[in-house]
Amino acid sequence: MTRTAVIFDLGGVVFPSPFEAFDLYDSRNSLEVGTTRSIIRTSSETGAWAALERGELTTADFHAALEVEAASVGVRIDAARVMATIGEAGGARPAMLHAIEQLRKHKYKVGALTNNWADDRGETTPGGFGALEIFDTIVESAKVGLRKPDPRIYQLVCEQLGVTPHECVFLDDLGINLKPARAMGMATVKVVDHHEALRELGLIVNVRLH
Image (cartoon, helix red, strand yellow):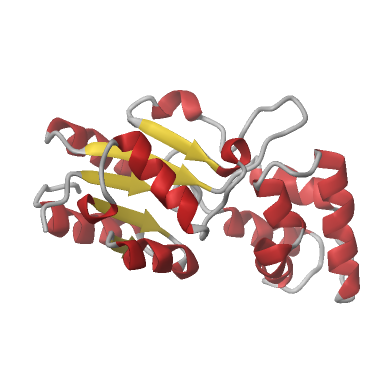
């Protein structure tokens, strides 16, 4: 199968993972590391986090809802501080930006598909989108009202790139988000170590990326 397009998740792939920020929040607030990560993982399926990423909640409503969800499992968190900790993360990973540039030089279409959220001014995360003009398209859950792993959002990014799923490679750090991509016919790369992920991607597209 000839692949002509590569689609990148942003947080955890091109940018540092928000989960790293959750662990940092725990360590700063005398919680067992992994506590906030666990709450967010649960909420990300059907709760406040999922609603935030579909653009259904204001910032204040999200903070209140997430704190209620934490309290339901006996944990007290400050949701505003959790989100502020995410904002401390660094910018895009240079190795990923270099790989994207190489892909474009070799005439691959390059897109981004991200579950994200907007603040009350409508500004979306992660920051630094100005540095991402190298993407042919960026599909953001907060703007389209759909989020991974809903198959419709994968189809949307394919349509915007003008390709079929069978022509795509998709990179994400979460297995739950890779499963529907594979079912649609995309080649997938799970990003645990981003250098290893780029080596794997390079083998698929036959381009040296690292």
